[in-house]
Length: 334
Image 1 (cartoon, rainbow, N blue to C red):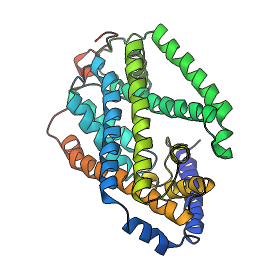
Image 2 (cartoon, one colour; image 1 turned 180 degrees about the horizontal axis):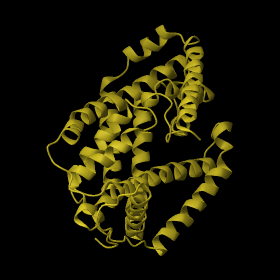
Image 3 (cartoon, rainbow, N blue to C red; image 1 turned 60 degrees about the vertical axis):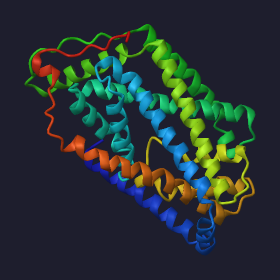
């Protein structure tokens, strides 16, 4: 598929989403929504902000678990890069902050970008695993809306497939070859990049690291449930914990791709539709959705934007390992 066609399809998809959001917005009683937001309990909202920040910290620690064996041992660097990436994700579409994270750590730790990219891929895989675990367990034991209940077979299949993949990665460790001087041809450079990427992916795949990453994923999603429920409580919306979990699953079902910056609009639509299934007032649910996004986006974006310049404009010069004729090999032990 040509870049022009891809760009055209992306614009078409965005236009369709925006049109749907406009139709949705015309049916909202915005005065009632604003009233629900204005009368929210600020003590509970602040608590929700703190819990959400703790959830973001679990993501940074999860990434750090895979960064350590490739030479980026600084937890502070992982924290700064992670928050910067999440902040950029809130102002870019399609999770563009993930690419920035690679550059940030590659520069800050003097590690080839292919190596850092492999750690990001594994870390994001565990974000999806945490979601699938929550979806599968919820579909088995909770009464979810039909749209989510129908995903039970797919969630279970994804869970089994993920387990098989993790076992395969652990049992088939990769070996990163040493790449000598800079390649001149594009295909040679691409091959060298792929070799480093796959070598790192296999090298960081161990049972203890996967167990730690899974624990961080489960904790992170649990903290997200708490964030959503505290925010609903602050707006005096009597939604049940099951309803909160269902809303969380619904609004994050497309977390890998954001149609709008911060997924604003789509988030409110999905949350309100799910809350309405549990008998909640639609306008009040929209207010809760706006409050959730406000306390999720604003603090992290401010932190991320504040941290991003020191990575982007820092005076450190990235020393590429391949320029020295060697590539750090991920150690399967710490």
